[in-house]
Image 1 (spheres, rainbow, N blue to C red):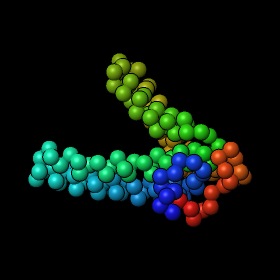
Image 2 (cartoon, one colour; image 1 turned 180 degrees about the vertical axis):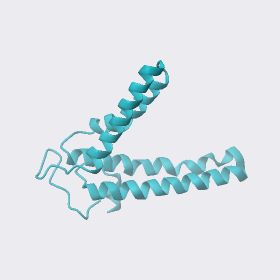
Image 3 (cartoon, one colour; image 1 turned 135 degrees about the vertical axis):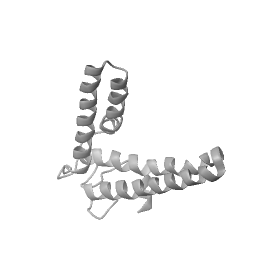
Image 4 (cartoon, rainbow, N blue to C red; image 1 turned 90 degrees about the horizontal axis):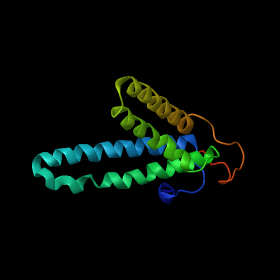
Length: 139
């Protein structure tokens, strides 16, 4: 089951998506808190303590790719849904106020759409180009 955490092919259910999201997010938060606490004691030499966060991002991306596969889309959709809101927000920060507000609204809507697309909507009911439907108990 742990090998599925680092697998980018196939499909994942909504339940598997939420399990990985919640567990990895909690672990990232724990590593972040421990790293910040260590930085108070050790100073800048505590930076390597934050490296496990990079390892925890791999299962998040892998389950995201498998989730867009379950919806019948390729990995580029995950890039749009994950990076699009951040790029729009950065563009908004460099824009005049009115344009910035419109861009931030677009970033918020794209972010919301991403969570609905990945976390709430059902996958394709039958086999698709990425494989058979996922089992509910599989990660």
